[in-house]
Length: 481
Image (cartoon, rainbow, N blue to C red; front, side, top):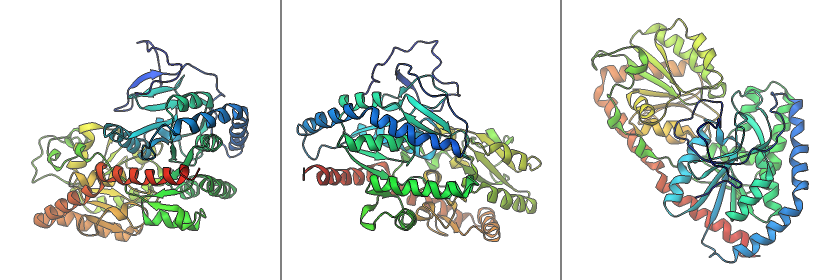
């Protein structure tokens, strides 16, 4: 079990984070508090501070990286070629998002099944020091951080390299997979290349579309696209979870087709079940009690990060028109994000809309199961963890026809796949309402199909495919040397 380098004993009085606790995350050890630059507000020009910090840190640590290269080369000879040790690195692990949630499920599963996997990222700016959570997730002390442009409650950060180098000596790895092309990933990627560690990446975030949606400056769009092209030139091959984003990698980010690998993702589906339906979870948040099942409203939900890039402006407009037409429908927003306050204002006079806040565990699973239909209009998700989670409880999903989610849903069998068109979505919502109220046999068949479809995305099948691919990468990287 990894313990932080230079760790300190926890005291009951230690305030390790000024944010509210995040469900399921427990600090098990800490790093010593280390100096860092003052956390910066967002700003286009302020991002220009990042390259000097990245390359300055690389040059400062160059002698130690060369020593590490020699050490790892000797260390690697002690292990069989099929014995893969891998580090997954993501800057934004210390936040609530799909990437962090997925990795925090995947890595413990891998480790429990004999796979040597580690997880690392940056400690959020609200922490005075780096920490280890749950004994395997290393949130490294940061050197620099700033608010992400157009994306509140998320940040661009760069870790201190000293602790990284000590950890790599203590826990040598053969491969490093980068989940996002962010500043910390740039620095760790460059350091890994000097240290002779094979690096590759996973296309988990549609950064070009996010930038176009959230940042007004056009030069920033071009700048981000260029940076991503350079990053994915360094960190190849690139894993994509679906065909749509494999095409983006080859067309926009100039990754050769033979360097794009489509691999499935998996989720801990045992946490979600159709049997959780009807246990009263929904009623805790919609203000109703003891409503008979035959008389209740048709329930729709959105569960996930409450952010603009999830296309929630579109959903708000559609729901306003739909709920004005019918008084027997309701919508539950579950989650937290910078856009939540605006949605609450938009629906202030609409009694059909409810907010459950950020949830986890059985409460979250119960809200999925109690939903009659799950709404997910995002066009920027490379996969769609929440779509699989909803379907695993038997809840049919209505998704857009672009991105990863439409590969998951079987149109008109496990839900509906729609273009981003208000009329199309209004017609689909009406069809859902009619299906639930007037054709229980067809609706139950759709629920059954949704659940069965979700079983394609088990943790077992995805991790097995991933580690077979990792062994192949290790052989290609080191056998020829």
